[in-house]
Image (cartoon, rainbow, N blue to C red; front, top):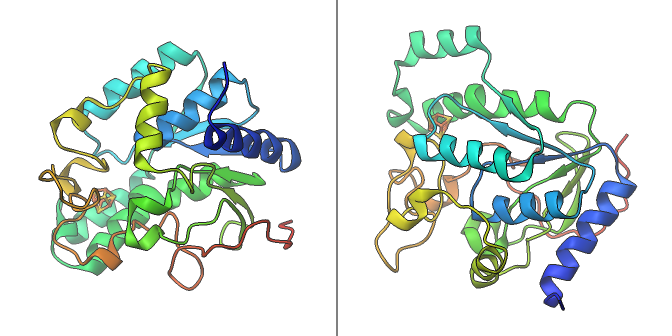
Length: 242
Ligand code: SF4
């Protein structure tokens, strides 16, 4: 079978990066792009640890897909949880849904439930693979395919950075990849349950994430650089993380 050029390029980037920058880890949140990458990694038996962060506030449909993906691919998917004491302190201070009250409170929740577990998952790794795509959001318009990540001191590979949404959907159909049942109910982008809602046809795909905030604030802190912004296009950075 002849692969489309974008699929071949993504696979080649993945294969080269996991070879050159081992050990590698893939953060999988089970969104559409992440399911493409999980399928590529599993089908081509690439050496990368697959992990996910269970924030404690995920949709049941996301857990169902997690179970389905484990059964289908037969690969270990490491699940990281927030640290219990930090979570208890956060909820004692802000309440169970404090993230609605201010941007600071929302960032504090993402910091405890997502960012801290991510740091543990990436400790000792030299490559972080993600499903970021330029077309996903204004905050992601300049996402590079490969760049040094000074925050986590490793390389970060976004193999689908240049893909279109149409190409993502075509891949999922072609290989019959399982996806989150919420996509069929108007959720193009899925995060934690209380911070995600369905969008109307024609609405921005990320409009349902933190819908009460301005578009330029709609990141959870997982992908921001030292300047608080996402990494810009900087293909094949020469900086060598330790
Ligand atoms: S997305 Fe919402 S519930 Fe999830 S960690 Fe961030 S603020 Fe908390």
